[in-house]
Length: 122
Image (cartoon, rainbow, N blue to C red; front, side, top):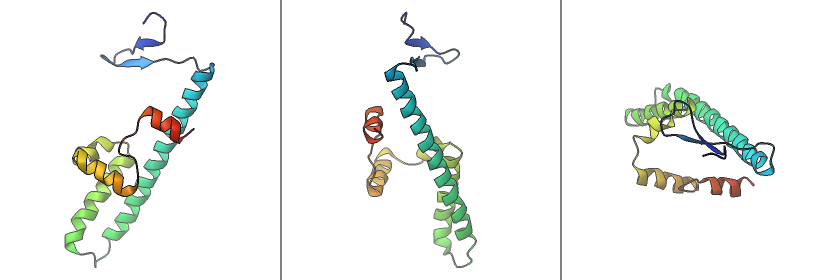
């Protein structure tokens, strides 16, 4: 657009990038939300990596039933993918309804929008 708020991102095909005046109140608020979202993503990666490490120890138990071993191995592989930022690889294997049911069981919302994030993280 001519006002400079939206611009075609170089080399990104049809991707549209929003630009903010980070010195304005709205821009600072958006930057704060973005920064907190990145912090949360980092913390989730650490949790995934830590849990994957714990599962590696579980896999070392000789008493682990063989029927459970493959499930633990898959869970560990999924957590390692998530820790590396490749959560899409994990999500491809689960149907949408299964993902939503898992979120409900965890007590988490089934969806996350920018508005929900801003409300939840003030």
